[in-house]
Amino acid sequence: MIDTILSSQAAIDLEEKYGAHNYHPLPVVLHKGEGVFMWDVEGKRYFDFLSAYSAVNQGHCHPRIINKLIEQAKELTLTSRAFYNDKLGVAEKFVCELFGYQKALFMNSGAEANETAIKLARKWGYTKKNIPDNQAVIVAATKNFHGRTTTIISASTDASSRKGFGPFMPGFEIIEYDNDAALEKALANPNVCALWLEPIQGEAGVYVPKDGYLKTAEQLCRKHNVLLMMDEIQTGIARTGKMLASDHEGVRADILILGKALSGGVMPVSLVLADDPIMLVIKPGEHGSTFGGNPLAAAICIEALQVVADEKLAQNAERLGQVFRDRMKALMKKTKLITLVRGKGLLNAIVINDSPDSETAWNLCVEFAKNGLLAKPTHGNIIRLAPPLVITEEQIHECCDIIEKCVLKMDS
Ligand code: PLP
Image 1 (cartoon, helix red, strand yellow):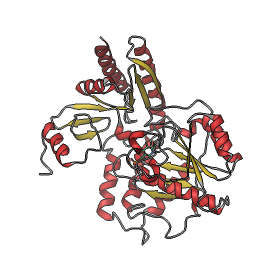
Image 2 (cartoon, protein in one colour):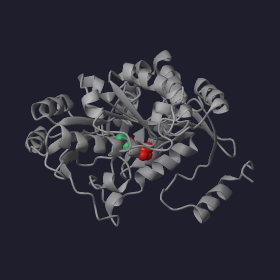
Image 3 (cartoon, helix red, strand yellow):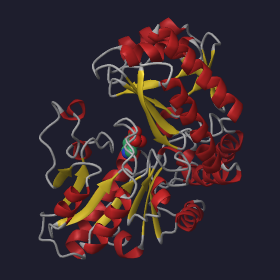
């Protein structure tokens, strides 16, 4: 049964009947992926312009990463951390040297990495900043997206993430994103242990803060002895044209949180990086995960990051992101349907000229799909456009032609 290729409708019906209804997918049933392409069960080919929310930066089923997966899976997949394995230390050294930190802690999902960062920041606050017990505050931003656990949604300002899931975890203060005065005021509170930010808010609709905001945040954290906790789960691993989005402003987080493309989309691998004075506040037995740091993930992570460097994916994202935004800006002159294009590297969004609860962006994505390009609205009238970073210039133009054709058709 599992090997049978169903028709699209049969697959949709199965999910509808037996799966929880916690997503609202576009009606496309995918079966195969390679590089920038995915194919549905009827054999139709699409350009992927979501990249599994930026987890597939290296392209679908990258041969080097898949080979590493097979090679390691035949040797050893999981030991738990009750014992050492011969791959974890190698991966820890690799990521510490690559990102410039003293210690690494591997987890699985992005949400788990954020939970880890929260625990680290709180424990650091009590043991190093002498914050009174249970009084630690983490400052987060409006419209943030850091995951779906009950603690993480306690810091969310998105009604659909929160409604019906209380009571919430105390210890978060929410300030307006991209507002320097709000930062200055919030960080002056002596009970604040950390500031928790995304350098670009991906889920919020690829909201890019003004130049200098992250630098100001870093400086204010230093001034007030507050840890800068940067969630680069969606923006990291070359997506925005640099290895980290923080690199655009030369900002170094005290706690760096990574996920998604760390494995090239092959399995859940997330990571928290920090220096000794922060990471070593957590002692044996105080935090962990059965699968976190498994040898399969460790081997895949090294290969996935090496692919990013060898194939110069950051440079490709930087260059083709510019091409993409130029094409979208040119399109805006021909239509009133798009009011804004924004982003960095190959993390971009177009804003559709309609209310956030209109169907226009959804219908446009359905039209994209009919024409062989997959993207999805985020927050109603915003469409995120984020292809795998292995895309070529010729392909970017082909995709811009598809987008243009669909927008002009819908506008007429
Ligand atoms: N943080 C950011 C910035 C994200 O974009 C996401 C997922 O989209 C997460 C955290 C959560 O990651 P995961 O879905 O792997 O838990």
